[in-house]
Length: 619
Image (cartoon, rainbow, N blue to C red; front, side):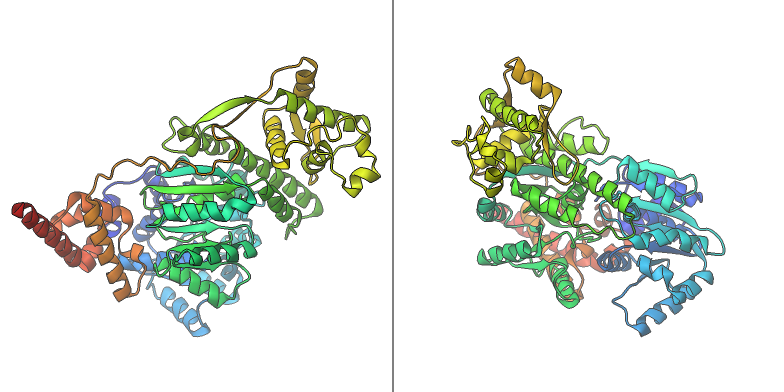
């Protein structure tokens, strides 16, 4: 095989040029240097280690956390003419040993393996007697206790590497990692002076939208969104198993081919649901966050979060599963204040496997801080993209699309309400009492809860002074005052409210306090659909090519996106190639794809062009 990386990139993967960061990562690995690459979903991380694996002697091990990732990538490599295999729990004992024997004989350039397998005696024997030239750790943030998907099995990777007769080059890859998580990855994987490649987190093809919706109105809002996205494949993330089942029922009631995925299902049922989604037998997947990491399905056109996730890291990773092929996609979050309580419940019931009690306490405190950051995202009125990028330490120079930048806002005067709320918190502090938002709202509304009466809180001068407000309105105002620094929340599980110096001065000085809201008050009934640019390709031809892809996928029993991504089809509908040489110019078409599918697609394009020309002549 050629050692020309540019030639290999086109011949094997069908890409004419490297994406940002790819060549830098490859050159470091090819020179024998460890790397830590932080690249957003869809940025082409897999090519960064797959191409060097083809150019290096020996075999490359790819440590991967989920079965679906291994199967997807092994299949995609096979479609590109690259020998690869995987080892995980789906293999029978016979299949497992057969794969190991083939790997020992040099049949594969890449071998995908679950981290738990590294500890088995049979795999260690294989590793000790095989020419392992490179080890890739995918989803490397799983090694960090401060990451959103910590997996104790990842802590054993460094021990496995140390047990080898010679140390291979190590590549660690992740889509989202804060500075602290990056430091943890380098330490826990024992990376040796790694080259750090951080390409930026922006995904310009994604449109971000937050709809503030009361819990009881979420089904109607979701129905509206599904109608908006009726021609696309998508994922709906839910907070609980019960919610997942309710969303599936709603989808099917709207005649949408759909499936569900959550940890309460049997392995077989989860596998079947996942296969139905990957092979486009269903259009929509309703799932908990147990689904998705490592799913390489490139034609996901939307991701809807039915409930708020617990951190910006989790949200950005899950939302980033839309538009992996670079085509336009939508990421919509349906937010209700009740989502916060659900997220807090999961945080407080975290067992913290492998953590000491002190480490678990610190971990929960950090998780609550992440939750605060997520609430800030959901309730802010500024640019959503700017906030997400800023969270990861990156500047947003221009928003390519978010609902806040497209929406209309107005400032309303909340001085009187703010003073009453701050005064209530102050009166409580005089009695040496602090409460969370629910109790403060209950006091302000004049609630008759047993606890209020037992503690004589109904004797406060601020008791019932906001009885004409809805509880939801009070929470929105308190969230705004917290966001603007007039009120603070404790960082423990109780989230107790207190007055800041800024809040105290605002009351004393009778400062005017405003809150920025959407022009249609607190809850937009219908968020404006994103303005999309006119397609620069022939959409009718694209639909025909998509139908051809679907038929070929059924015939060959592979996922449609494995044959060609939506982006490749769009490029065909733009270029309209009718010769083999022209077809090779399409982004995503390499020599193997030309051989396997060129005749069918060139024929379809030629036929379309002929009929279109005849139609125009008849006019």
